[in-house]
Image (cartoon, rainbow, N blue to C red; front, top):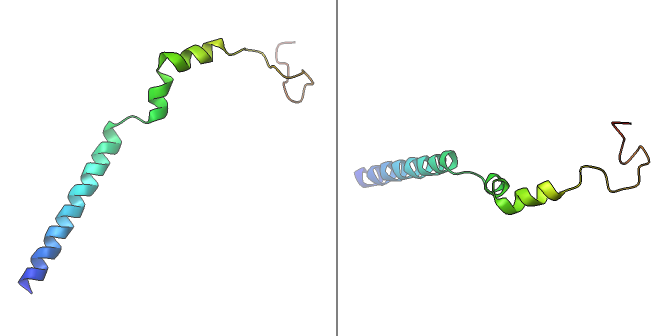
Length: 67
C-alpha cells in the first residue's frame, strides 16, 4: 500500500510540475503572429498596400467615405 501511495504522490507532483512549465511557457513566449508583424518584410507589404479599394466602386463592396 505504501508503494502505490508513493507512486501516486510522485505522479501527482510530476503532473503539477509539467502543468507549471506549460503555464510558464505560455506566459513568456510571444505568438508567431506578433513576431511576424514586427518583421520588416510584413511591414513593407502592409505599407505598399493601396489605401483605396481595388474593386469597382458600387457603394456596396467599397463604400466611399470621403465623397
